[in-house]
Image (cartoon, rainbow, N blue to C red; front, top):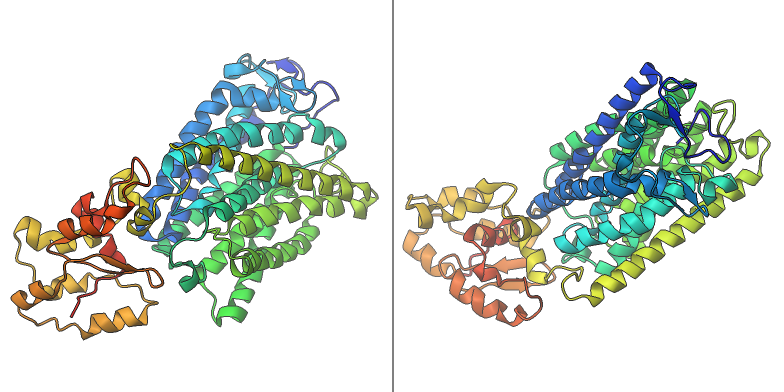
Length: 545
């Protein structure tokens, strides 16, 4: 965050309305609008991620994000704000002088001395809320819901608050001269690398090898809607971090655009070279990588340098995925570690080279403007924050795994059926799930042709496709009845299922009984409602001949 006035030792001082610069209606209007647009990034994130996952897990990630922001906002408005921006204690954490946003209603803070303190607190609440939710993309499809919530609760207090205070709340890193305009370190490095550690611990999803970690997305148009809202909100994410309307705001907006489009262009080129076509998901991810990476530098660097920084962002984020997912086989589902973590790291280091006080008088000069020491200050800050957030994540994993109730991974059967119905009671797309039950549950006479027209067999599995095509649709109903066999069986390598339509309850119970002892809250698949069982049919429906 950039402040127009931040004298030493008065970081948390208050100005009464009417004193000095407190307050300015133009700045306040911009900050109110920015708060709303950054708030919109949270549901945007949930849509963006839901479309990139398989449809059986799309509601789970939406619910994680929405319940997550509820939890984070409760923390922020009660004691989070004061731990970040309250009276400094040894550079490590804020005091309790602003608990429940005490005294902020009719005062401006010296951090943002032209806007009411409550507006500043509202704007900052969006950053505090979205930060831990970025990790949903890393742990998607295989982490238990309650474990995720308890994890982000403690992570927010132990990682986000101390790091945000040390950088933005006049803590020890800012006293060293370390700067981060809008969250490359505070948000993207902390969440990106904590997500990487979580992904490593949770292990690979079933079918990871077959798809090389890139499972087919369920709804790219929905992802694009989320992406558009994220891009829109990012202008307030970065532009609002000027905390006023000034030339710094204009620099932040221009640099944000360049970061997005140049990195998107680099990813498009890599997509063309690697895949012989430009894939939609690659373009979208490239733009997001650019937005995340330019964030820390956007209000400190001149416009030309954004082009140079963005080329590095594009190359490193693309090859980060090749390294983490391809070589190291860490299943960071939506590549949070590369798209946010690595880019946040590069953007923060770039400040050490390109920052100029001509752009932001309250900022710093980088190596190209006569202050080469800034490179080492930025590097030290990045390394310390990366190690600290990863370490706290490991500690939290250790503690949660020791508790019976908050162990992290879902059971294998739950992962196969999908988290949506198991944890949240719905399927994202009911028509597809329920087609098979029409004739048995409603008494409707469904033609076999109609039933089979809804089968959603994964395109990548040629063997399954061939089996489907070989089925004689015109068999009499009696023949079909006898050929649908009475078992569930899973072939781990292909994640394929043989499903008994008429006798699934009895045989399903038999075959999954041996898993029952794992967790107190995990039920047999056979005891789940029938439309959830039909999630098995989402991917494969084989008729044993």
